[in-house]
Amino acid sequence: MEDGLHFDKIFNSHLPYLKASRTPPPANIRRRFNNLDSDVIGIVITVRQPLSIKVGKNTARNTNKREITLIDGRSNTIKVALWGDLANNEGQILSDKVSENPVVILSDVKGSFYQGEFSLSTTMISTMEINPSSTDADELQQRFKSFVCGKHVLHILPPTKRMREAPMVDLKDIIEGNIIELFCTFKTIIIKVINKEKPWYENCKTCNRRVYSRYDTTLCEKCENKKASFIRKPILKLVVSDGIDEAHVTLFDASDYLSGCTQSEYAEDMKNCETKEKCKYYKNLVTCQGKEFIFLVKTDKKTEPDQARKYIIAQEIKKYELLEVSNVQNEDDGPNDKKKLKIKKDASTH
Image (cartoon, rainbow, N blue to C red; front, top):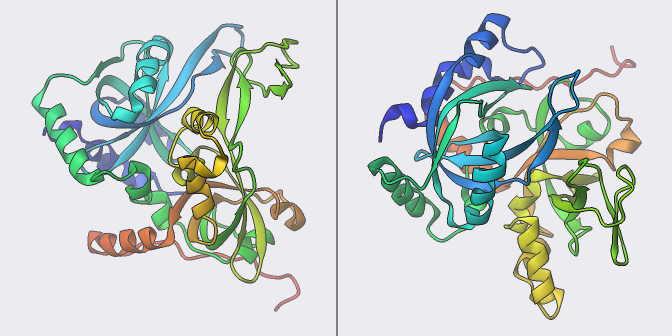
């Protein structure tokens, strides 16, 4: 497979500037990177529902955006934002075929930085091929099947670079707002999954605001529509504990890791089963209770300690043993340049 189609070629050129930091990359680097057109090949592992996004500050024109996640032959993952017709047409095809993990080739896509994270985005001239007839695509599919071996792909993906490099802290430090670093991880046991029966919420397709289901109506207050069309967005509410402190953690996109499915698949499974206890995906959420996980969070300096117990939002979640294995595998990559953990000093200490 051509190296130019691997994510590594893009990653390696810009990794020095992708550290999880409050300081954005230099302006000249941002300009150079944002002007870089790339071609990539990858296997689709997740497809999000489309969102209606306002284009420009002085225009009322909206366009659709849909996010997909790709994995390459070296188990690197990358998020790609599809815009406009690609989001509507090819994006819908990918949504219908995501369980088959199709191969896609994207041409003329551009990269961008957001909070130190790298992603790709389509442009007006971008093109996409789905399941192309090529040696590269066939080889990638074979590697993927060998890698997955019948397991759910989200359960065996290695942690992201951000998660591997983020310092690990105590839950107490996050609750009390003692962390200076922008991103950190903590290890806890999931005590309870609060919303196992409905791990999603509904958003209006027209305005992207939350809708409320009441009897046979789906009310969008903004559109004043009692029969609003909606899309399901993932959300999982957890109670976690490290044996000393307890907190509430909310997962959004990362909730797929625990359920092992999309929200549509979960809803369909619940609908078709006689009882919820017989539902495959419901069982996944039940069995994760009592197990140990690592959470990646972005710290929020504005949140008061009492609020933090209810409003910790996690960007990523992995089984603890998976993170340990990943860190061992990365020890050979070179010197360990992990950030030293910075804790706010108590004003009363000297």
